[in-house]
Image (tube, rainbow, N blue to C red):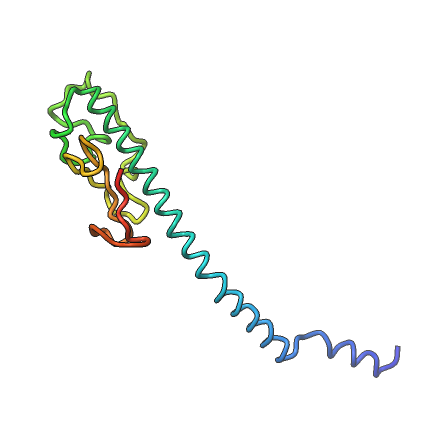
Length: 146
């Protein structure tokens, strides 16, 4: 191999500045197009998880009420699904009714709320106030009621 051919081979080991700029621009365009779609999917999935969590808590609260003989009007919060209330005898409480205290939080880290009597259901509603933690809202901040 001649000396000139060796120099040509050794010079082509790195990318040129133009090649690097083109790759960075392509990555930037892809990120600008794909990122908003992915972020909206994350918000939608959190709402679905909140709906499932509210539904599960409502079912577990109904079990608690059936086990203890309490009425929905006696319920002020959902902590009774995790820790036995003092005024419930041990033989009536078949809990904990949820796997962990984390189950009492919605996907945004806010506690699920119980409202008695319910606005959607007769006895009670289990509500997540969405990403903003405030009543009302749209999109990811929309209230989840079960």
